[in-house]
Image (cartoon, rainbow, N blue to C red; front, side, top):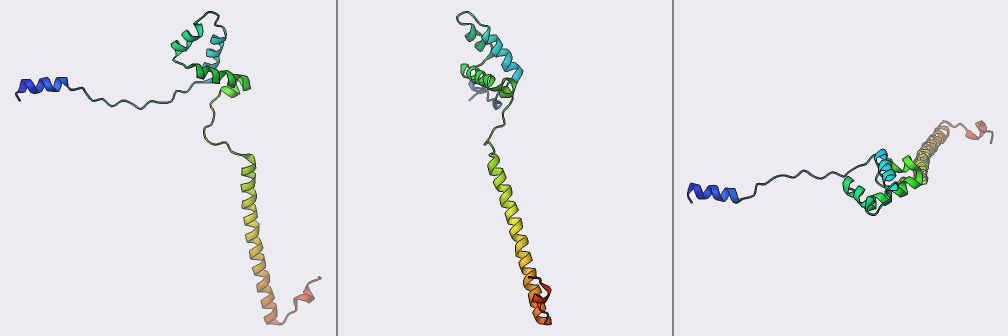
Length: 134
């Protein structure tokens, strides 16, 4: 290949470009309320579609935002924590289990101490019944 042919071949090859990874869009509660107010004020045919196209939104987003607004205005429109929801009863159960394990360990230690005291009393010839009011 001559030099002119190799430059033509290079010119025909597309340039490789690394495209940035797309990020999930997040909307503030104020933005959502502003869009919902604008949608509520639309009267003519195609007005809602024009707003959605202008803002780059989907009608499903609009539906979800309306439900959120109905559930509690800004509370429903604020960012939601993602992931599984924590069950308050499960948290209380875990706390009780930890407490139960701690108390079982204390009981085991107390029984061990009592056994040692009985053996020491037996070796020394001291009666524990005399010291116990029971």
